[in-house]
Image: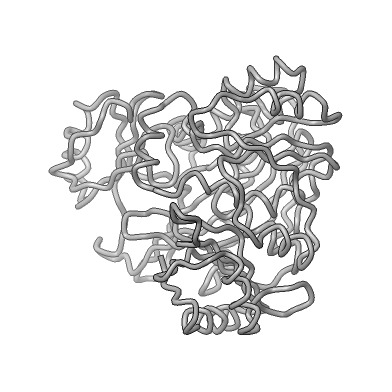
Length: 442
């Protein structure tokens, strides 16, 4: 084991909120540093997601569920839109962190340094733990919630793949490419094995960045920055165009890793675009998985969680799977990747399991074709008897809004809670048919 010799206790209680970590946290919700020092990948992400500076607001309702201390600090790039503080505190009863702000290209301010330094029992954390946060920890004499090496290694797809291979676990047919010149030969070799398409994965990537799906015999040029952290993985793409495959799905196990324990606390199904970009989640998976499939997912999730712990990673994350269903009823279960950070499923899962043990939830991005003031969104949902409040069996819980340049809501992340999948779909249908909101799916 890389960091420490002890194995943590594993607790697998799907549908239950994991215990909060002791202490307070100063969490840097700034996606500038999600790719560590690979600025080119960050620029690619910014070009793809135009409202990236509001992404960190998703942590606002969930941070108090992750850390039990009284002095949590959340560092955002911009303030949340009006209406959120009142809804999250007065209507939902959540404990919100103190907010500070740091722009995408700004240095950490003296105000932020002093707030961290003067918060007893505080840890420093972020989407990833990089050298910038390590420097702040040293400057303020404040401990990190994890380690730089553990965070970097835990998000490395190349290291994970070869760990699985060495341990005889199910893996994709894969060829390593040390540089851009290695992509075409790898694709050609996989084409000879019967694959029509390949997927090219940078060692470190997120949100579809660092991942390219391509024709096996004619892959596009791959930029040099995809090799910043080492070789790319070139893998055979498995979908229902291959003989004998009827469908593929992508479930995900949510986890929290601490020094002493690993908590597997939810099993979701990812909603992916045609380009395999994450668009939402539903829990539990729909249709329900066979018990033997769920057991195998948990077995592999436990194995990789122990690997992550050994790398020195501490925090939340997800193990993403690829399920390929065959005509004869057999199912191939392979791990796609580990995301060792707060993910798009972390905050909705924490909120859902806080307000309801078990039950079902659906997280989706919704667009407003006619942008409106944020308070009006809350008012319209409330007037339609859709806005979730504690004690309700079902409802819509707005998690975060993305705004236009003039401060109107253009898009939001909405969590739908309910006792069953049927109730989720009924609530979603009602939401999409509200004449004063004009929601569309993203």
